[in-house]
Length: 217
Length: 110
Image 1: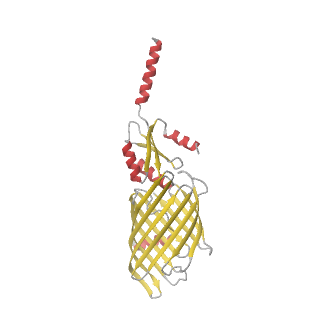
Image 2: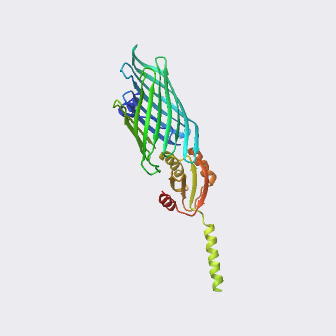
C-alpha cells in the first residue's frame, strides 16, 4: 500500500491545498507538485460531510538537496466547524494520521520510521474571494517539519455551477525543519475548476512550477 | 343555466388545480459558493427515489428538486438531507413551475 501511495505521489507531478472533505459519500483525489521541494498525493473517502479518511503520501526535498523525506500512510480529516452564510462559507478542518518515513539526511539513510502527521486549515470563500491558511506537520524520532501555506484568491467574475470558475490566487508557503530555510515561496497561480475537476498552477520567481489537481466524485 | 354550468366548470378547474401535487420543490440554501457544494447536494438529492431531477444555482442560492409522478418528499426530509450534505436551508416552497422553467428563469436573470 505504501509503495502504491508513493507511486501515486511521484508519478503524478501535482498536489493539494483544497478542502480535505468535498461532500458526503464522495471521493477526493488530490495531487500536487510544490516547486522543487514538495510532492504530495492524497485519496480520501468521506462517509459524511464532516469527516473523511484515506491515504496520504508526501515527499519533501531540501532546497540544497542535502535531505529527502518520503512519508506514506493513513490520514483522517475532520470538519471542526462550518459557517454557512447567505453568500459565503467558512470552514475549519483538522487532521491527523500515521505514516512510515524513509529518506536521507546528514546522518545517513533511514526507512520505516514511524511518523505522526497532523495539521489544520481555515478557509473562507465567496464566489469572488477566497482565503485559506493551512499548516501541516510531521514528527518522528528522526525529524520534525512543518509546511504552512496561505492562499488569497480573487475571481474576475462570479461563476455558477455549470460555468468554468476562474481564480487568480497568490500562494505563500514556508517550510521548517531544514527544507527551505529562511525563505518564503511565493507563487501567483491561475486556478480553474468546472464540474468535479480542479486544476491550478503557477511559477515562482525562480521559475519553479507549482501545480495542483483535484477531482471529486 | 349556461352561465351556471360555466361557473361550475371554472370552480372544478380551480379545485383540480389546487388539489394537484406541486411537482417542484424550491429551496433557498446558505453556503452555496462553489461547484463542489452543488455537486454534493446534487448527488445527495439524486440518490432519493422520488427525485426526478435537481437544479442548483450558486448565484441565486437556489436548490430545486422535481419529483416523479405521484411521489413526494416531505419538507423535513429535504431539510435534513441538505443538513446531512453540510448546508442550511433558509426557506422551502412547493411551486407549480417546472424545473426547466426555474432553470431558464434563473439563467435569464444573470
